[in-house]
View 1 (spheres, one colour):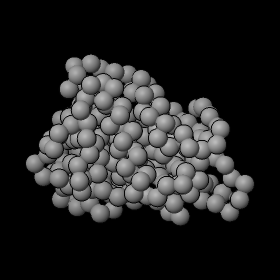
View 2 (cartoon, helix red, strand yellow):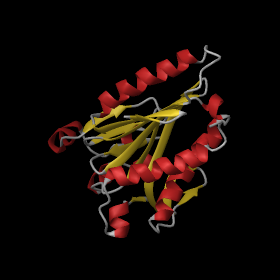
View 3 (cartoon, helix red, strand yellow):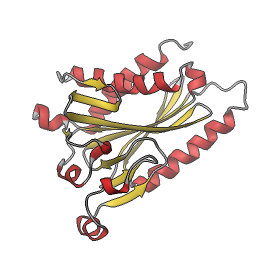
View 4 (cartoon, helix red, strand yellow):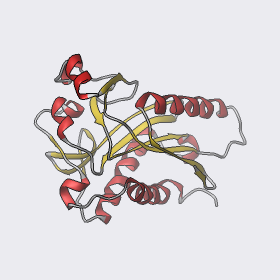
Length: 225
């Protein structure tokens, strides 16, 4: 765990989805309570982690986008959780960098749409540093390497302009479990990873540091030092 002037950074390392969700919810409620404090200056928290295998279904997702039954889930040792974020179904597993920002967008002076765009942009710039030509697609949240290959999923929740949930970037994630879902509800799309595209198994901590630097430049540069 570390700090800078504007936000608190948490390294949760490998943690079950349910446990990370509890941590998020506690910080989310704290941030909402701080809304009543006119002297508040902490814009929020960044939680970096990875999860053991789990499928999560967003509040607008379709249950039939999970293509396997409960017995197969048990046999494969994969958990399953309905989630109160936006988006459809996605997969989290080892080798995937997950970031949960709990941020007060009012203090950052941005709206929800700009926030989503900024998260995508931070990932795009991180991947460009690895010589991966990342992009966003219209009406398809997340980050893509081309119109048919997604490398980062994104789904958030916001209340009173405080955010939770976030993004999942495939670093060296095993991709086979994505075959068990219609990832993000998008038919005919492929999921890829940094390892698959570069042949290099970057440590999650290295990618997290790169992503953090991009977020600081995009979100904190205009705040008073």
